[in-house]
Length: 352
Image (cartoon, rainbow, N blue to C red):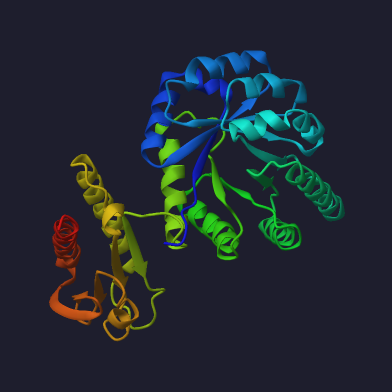
């Protein structure tokens, strides 16, 4: 793996007073989140953060629109500060503190959804000029965070800034209703950006109103890991490789893939309870292919997989080579049993 993308989590500042939110943040830290983004509106929010941040194993990025709060925010020793571009002059007055603390700076473009295409790109130029100004001042941990509801505009704007100005980018993943819709939307947007080498960190933004829910946070993290894992930018416990199906497919491939995903997740959780992380052994790749004509060969890089045959049967294969034929109804359980054996073997080998 060439690099691993750090995960950040955005939550409402007032939410951290709730016990359920604290539990969600603690769980998020265990799942790989390293920083929490908190909107800071006033002194009350700063006090709230100071009271609770020391109890959480997460760095704090303060998101502010009022530049008069910068001094108090930096006094807290935050991991980062996110501001609108017009706050740059005030930031420069705190240059020495930012450099000494090693605090990251994020220039955020927010509230641009209703602006015209020309206005949006004019704002990009302003952001780039301020980015260069901070960079020349010696601030190294510097990032741009661009938001736009149109994924094509977002992609082109990010790529343009990366190529012309060498900007580092924080990318957002927004959670919306519907698991399939989330996976498809974020795979397209994030996958395109990270494929182009755009993005040094990923900010998770759960659905509004439920960002203090442990389930909501967990769903956002799971989605992020799936997308980043597919781009080889985040260690994954398991990966499912599936074909798009064709006329030779005789199985209900979608239903079978969902069942395998559920069982693999339960298997991963069981190993986690034993203090074993599948990521530590390089993860496990499982293939679900529609037919045995091309399936095993196309998925030869998988540790193990299944492929459909005629007459309600299928084959199990390892490293592209078939080794067992079974009735369709027994394929999933047999696959999981062999997968578990492979995992145990990997853990045993890792101790040698």
